[in-house]
Amino acid sequence: MQYSEKVMDHFMNPRNVGEIEDASGVGTVGNAKCGDIMKVYLKIEDGVVLDAKFKTFGCGAAVATSSMATEMIKGKTIQEAMEITNKAVMEALDGLPPIKVHCSCLAEEALHAALWDYAEKNGIVIEGLKKPVNDISEHEEVPEEDY
Ligand code: FES
Image (cartoon, rainbow, N blue to C red):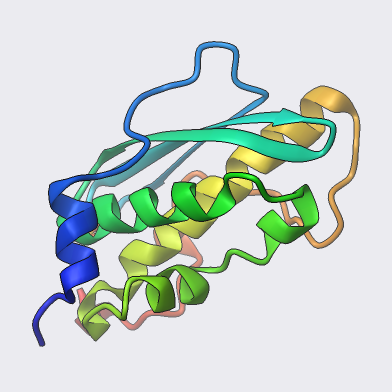
């Protein structure tokens, strides 16, 4: 399977690369199996995500999904941001090859980790948000042979 045009576009011209100095929440998640790491910065004010940036040390699909995920989360309320699943990001990218699905999980988890950090710093509870893991490979349902 080939990568979609959207995946290629977000890989070649990733949006929102960088960091936010006074970020409201920062999340770092890795996958020990492939060695990829993603860091997401969110700027949140009055319950709305005003800005999102990322740094990804990872494969093309990880870069493309972080780019799309940070685009999707901007302007969203925290509850809306919770609905940005890896599936939603993949759909927005017109799909990923099955072997690359786990890369999109990294993006979802990194967003959640940044939201968790924000919640902790502000002493709030975000409904439906689970404590993030540092290494998603330990919790993945993706079978080993898919790597
Ligand atoms: Fe690790 Fe894609 S191969 S995130």
